[in-house]
Length: 95
Image 1 (cartoon, rainbow, N blue to C red):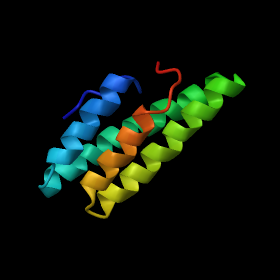
Image 2: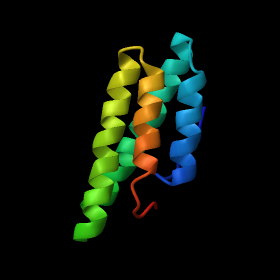
Image 3: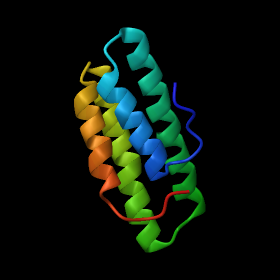
Image 4: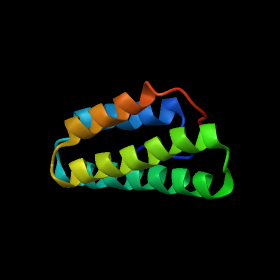
């Protein structure tokens, strides 16, 4: 399981790598928990930081993590990994 403490590029990359390798139901449950953690952290960040530029980037991360979570729930972890990898291409703050 990935220890999610932030929504840095390193964290997103690590979760994406685990998503690409996950095949067992148990692994998918872990991935959903990791995505939940990223979603929660970005949500807290959005509540505390209202800078327009930061908000747009973090909102994309927040929404993208939710989309990735839903894909894992549908048994499509590789597509979820692709969503995270696309988010990595968006420049912006990572706390």
